[in-house]
Image (cartoon, rainbow, N blue to C red; front, side, top):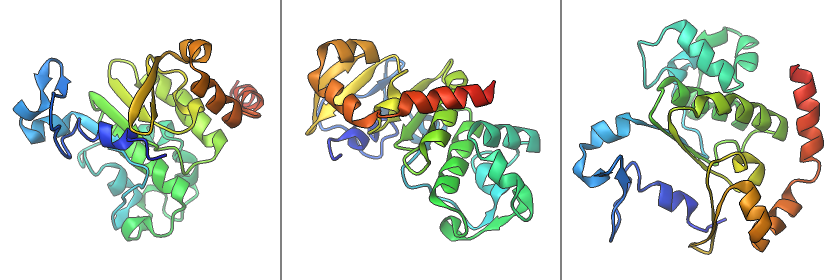
Length: 217
């Protein structure tokens, strides 16, 4: 907590710019690209989900109002939101209040994830975006995202190692500095801090994943 994870990732969509060096996408400095063009290629899910007064469908399709119902439903299903939406009074036409009044934190987060997925961005940024869901829902979302991470660059910011352990590259930050990087197995083998974090977090995670996998078969 407070190690600078979000501060670093906010340089990509240019919420602010670097004071030295550069941030490049496909070899282009992000400061040399039109801001609307850059951000149109980026989908972001923040820790605090922002919803607007309107229907659930309108909130999911906020970035793509012309999306078909089938596309909206697919995004919701992948984000593990379909189940609770279906039991709402009016389904996808259920009106939610400003900032998602009437929905739980986990429900708002899953709608925000569905919104980002519907955009089909080249770069997907998930900033602690599963922090408001329970461990079972988080695992189901991670399984679904395995397919969606293909052919796009995905940045996942998290405090839970279970959220990032399948990443191609994990960066470990401590007090604002990069202290280690590598795959999950590489960090387990050579980074004492990483191993300590994992030992304190996992607990019954393996048993949970096994039970969920069996239920999905």
